[in-house]
Image 1 (cartoon, rainbow, N blue to C red):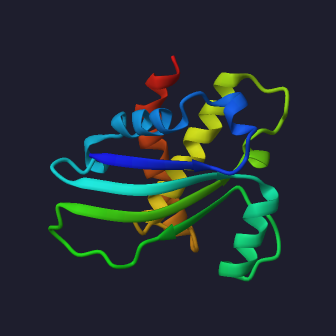
Image 2: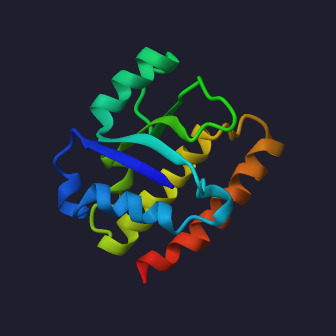
Length: 153
């Protein structure tokens, strides 16, 4: 079972997502079995932020002086067969998700879910540095998104 602890430092998220923690935990319940961590307690922290704050983090931890849509920080101390696992932290920028500004609530949620899945896969060790890894990660993203899209209907 996955538990998402949601923090928000950008008030605009509340205009688009009601009950944020409940929303993201519900998203995880729709994940395919492969990613549900059955019989384990898996935790992660999600910070809903903005371009200004994410740029500071991107500069500090990745030495990139620009904003970005998402940052993922996997927790390195993982051991196999643990009953409780902390995966790490995800930060999402509201400014990236809210483009265009006149998009509907459903489209906003879909983009939020898609980028959340992307960050989640990074926490699991997936990456897209080379084309082979990109294709593998994209394949997993699409499978998870397909199972979660039921939530949007």
